Amino acid sequence: MGRVYLLDARYEDAATLFQGVLEVATRDNSRNENESAEALHWLGNISAAQCEFGKAKKFYTRAQHTYASPNSLSSGHKISTISLAETGAERAHLCGLGHVYRAQSNYGHAEECFVGSQEIYSCIGDGQGLASTLQGLGYVYRLRFKLAEADGCFSRAHSIYTRIGDDMGRANALVGLVKVYCARSEYAQAKASFTQALKINTEISNVQDEANALCGMGEVYRNQSEYINAKRRYTEARNICDRIKDALGRAISACIRAGEIYRHRSKYTEAESCYTQAQGAHARVGNAEGQANAFYMVGEFYHHQSKYAEAASSYIQAEEFYACVNNDDGQAKALRDLGAVYCRQSKYTEAVSSYTRAGEIYRRQSRDVAAESCYSKVMNARGRC
Image (cartoon, rainbow, N blue to C red):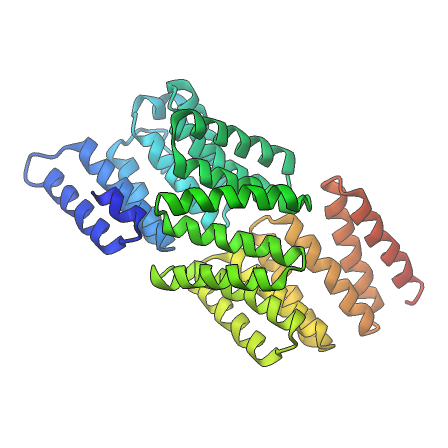
């Protein structure tokens, strides 16, 4: 029943049930380690669903300690496949920690967790666990613009979920694939996959992931300049996030909606208010990636209004946040636009530095067209120094 409550976003009810299980399992001398670890794991899932990532991490770590081994991740993040495989249920907590680290934009630790749990799940033949791990890896690769690797992870996860009949997992894998399609500007495929994911989530009453799918559909429509459809989807997603008290979802929705407003309606006061709300919400839940995105969009807001000093300040903060979470694509984008702002201010030496750094990142990503564009702007800026 606790899992049903979690699926329905009834977090308090779910937490109460699993806390009860934990208390019974640990009472007096009748401690049952399996039940205790399972309850702690689900309490971690509940906390993560509410964007309480620090709390979730503590639950997952306690669950791991229940199955303590000398080489566990909790002691220095060193993964021992053999020891973890022997502890059985610890694989789930390792994967859970990976998802928490990913949500906190700590991609290095997230990848380490996912790779370790992937090996374990493969060894023991746990398809559902392997699919969840592959999804986590897929998002990490997507944020690092390793699109081929991300596509492979999401596709494998989708195949596994389809084979075992897990509709919720299948929908989530489709949403992951759409992120890859959008990055490639393959909007027809993105829209088709989002439509499938939305249909599945609606049928199984998975309200939280339904909101994510709606927000993703809005993004696809916005990229295709279908602004009326985009606004409708964002509004539907925002209503769901408000109903289930999803702070992070509200922040993402507010930020994207603000971008649509300022670009196409020139309502600058409303746009700035939305950005401020988004930044605050991302900061409260410790989402560095969200803060980076919010600062970047604020930079665009000021850039569009020819407020170049304010734009430069926002782009710099965005670039720093993107660098902290190893988001190369976001970092390059912020540096590229920072170079343009510097040119507007006749700060050509700074522009050369920004464009050069952006070009180097694009070159590492094998995005030759974007890299050459930056290097061309470097030459133009040098000619004005």
